[in-house]
Length: 316
Image (cartoon, rainbow, N blue to C red):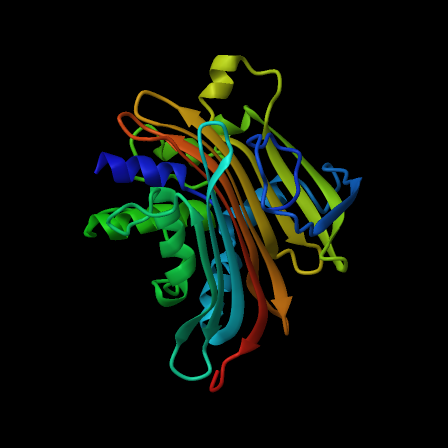
């Protein structure tokens, strides 16, 4: 159980090219999607910190975009890289998959390549990170994106369902507590009155995907805090992209780092959306992360997921 808890904590959260501290190694994400042009006056009458925070906490459209995938046929390109202690690549996975919703759902591998240290002798993945990636992004199109965005609460559920709810809560409801995770649960609540004293807020104007006018809202740990205080803050940076035209969220980036006697992780995750015939759908997901816990090998991995060629399935 502790193994699963440690893993789910490090794999928590899933955006744009930002200047946050990144793990110093190969980055598979070469797809640049946003250009910032100016700082926006955060004291403007129409826009203020509360406007953005309320939108982040109350948004449901980001979660709905993943549910919408089930109606579409599309192509997914998945690249996964694993690393040794020197941050040199020691394993590669590439999948090009057609998710076909023209009739009964089926998944077709167009390309399937593995290189290096990917599998154990028993055929399972070497890393839990890759196993969780496989579950979320290879099978997510068949899984339980239910009508309501999740709120993590383990009551009445088996362990696997509980872990999935925790993961999805942190992805789709940042700022809410994650129940049942030791030493972590309340550290995700960065918008409470007590936690706000530790963070700075800023936002820029920009252009997303060459044509969409956006606001880029950033929450970062204040630089003048003591090292002890900074080390106790799990979320180092949270960036959210808002479509200026309708204030819907098009992207989300999070930088997390935390260490105690049970686990140690350093993770940056990103999700981006775009419109297809005015329907918002996921287009890019990235991850860079290290995680470690006692008596187990440290896991180092990154991945890039690209979705394209969305087409509404027949009968939808």
